[in-house]
Picture: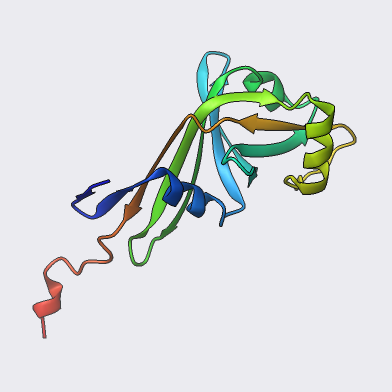
Amino acid sequence: MYANDGFRELDRWECLGLLAGVPVGRIVHTRDALPAVLPVNFALDRDGAVLLRTSAASELVRAIDGSVVAFEADEVDAATHVGWSVVVTGPAAVVSDPGEHERLVRDGPRSWVPSPREVFVRIEPELVTGRRLTAGRTTYGLDHVS
């Protein structure tokens, strides 16, 4: 961790703690050989893995199952210029174990757009990075004007 001109890098546990407090993030993946970003609701599993619940027939599931993806969430106050951003990078996979699926039906994320056949996607947190914006709002020299 280090501070640098208005931001501070966060350790893994700070990052996971911040992620646990927000309901929506963005998944970054490849679609037709181009980068794609999609907002999704999510939850963290006990080990810090990012969990998504979505339609089994969704294009997202086909695009990310078995691929390395990035997941980003943030919270920034535009007025004060204070906030944070966290990125989790790792392989994504549909949860196929029946016992694990049943546990997630009870304890996992709820889909904001339910469908008849839902699956859970798990993103392993192999790389977890984050930054906290600490500079706050500056007046750019106008604070001495009377």
